[in-house]
Structure formats: structure tokens, C-alpha cells
Length: 224
Image 1 (cartoon, rainbow, N blue to C red):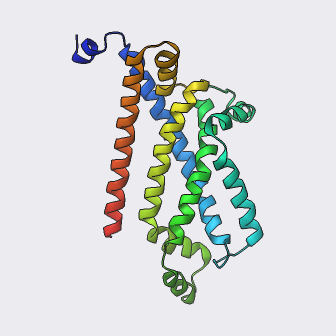
Image 2 (image 1 turned 135 degrees about the vertical axis):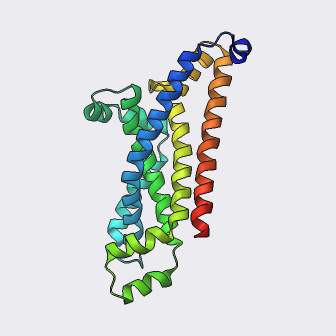
Image 3 (image 1 turned 120 degrees about the vertical axis):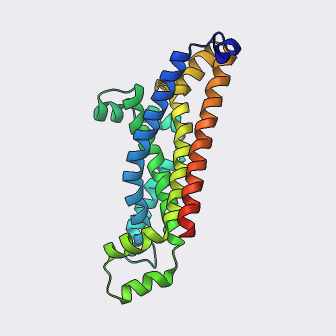
């Protein structure tokens, strides 16, 4: 018997392992689509704000309202509200596939705000110099804004990934699976504190790994 089995004899470690895999799959899939949607949305928020390259106050206000509304809805409530949408897109409303849609819709607006903030930190003089040299908006975005804001963008993606870990855990309450589901099913409903302790410890470790990796990347690109 291994030390972990001796310390926690009531835990099914195969079940814990599968829950870890499910959590990582939800995190990886949702983070990918969150970046795919959140990055362009954040760029548009930046470009359409007053005083920016394509200032359109009405469009900015509309985008900002949508982002603020989605960010203000608690994730568990959002997940329940999106069940019909999730089922229409994925064919299921629970499990890993059923969790990714609400995870993305909940996290993409959050990332978009962080992207907008990171882009605002870019020196205005660099943008104006690029405009003076005849650069197009797409060139300024891809060759100036994104490279200059890279540390802030990585930091934003790291914060979003950590938030998604928490979202996946909350999603376990409504059938998303993963470590959150085990914590709720066994730790809370089943009155098994050892399950609660192990799942929380694993989530903490995952957050620490993500934050450490993000911090290293930020430091690396900040020096450049």
C-alpha cells in the first residue's frame, strides 16, 4: 500500500486521477476558445474607445455593455441559464463538453477587459510613430500593439486560466465533472472530508503551477 493510500484509505485514487484529467481537459479546451474569442474582443474594445485608432463611441459602449453584463453574472447562474445554448451547440448539457461553452462565455469577457487594459499600457508615442510611417491598423495591431503588450497579455491569460480553474470547480455542482464534482459529491453531500481535502489540495497545486508558469513567461518577455 502506497503512503497516499495509507493516509487516505477511503479515497478511490483511480477516480481522483480521472477527475484530474477531466479538469485539465475542461481547462485546456475552455482556455483555448477563451483566448480565440477574448483576444479579438479586447482588441476591438481598445480600438473603438475614444481617442484610439478607430474610435466609435457607440460601438464601444455596446461592446462594453455586453462584456460588463456577462462579467457580472455569477458563473453557476450563467451555467444554468446557458443550458439550452450549450445543448444546442454541443448536444449535451453536462460533462466536459457541456461545461466548455459556459466556461468560455464566462471567461472571454473577463479576458477581453484584461487585453484592453494591457493594450492601453502601450506607449502612445510608439503607435503615433507607426502611423506616421504609414502602417495600417492591422500592422499596428500585429507588429506594435501585441508585441509591446505581450507581458501584460500573458499576465491576463494567466489570471484568466486561474479563474477558469475556479469555474471548473464550481461547474462540478451542476454536472460538469472533474475535481469540483468529486468535492461536491463526496466531500459535501457524502460528508467525506478526505475527498474535500484532496480535491482542494490538487486545485491549489494546479493554480500554483499555472501562476508560476505565467510569471516566468512575463518575466522572460519583460526583459526583452
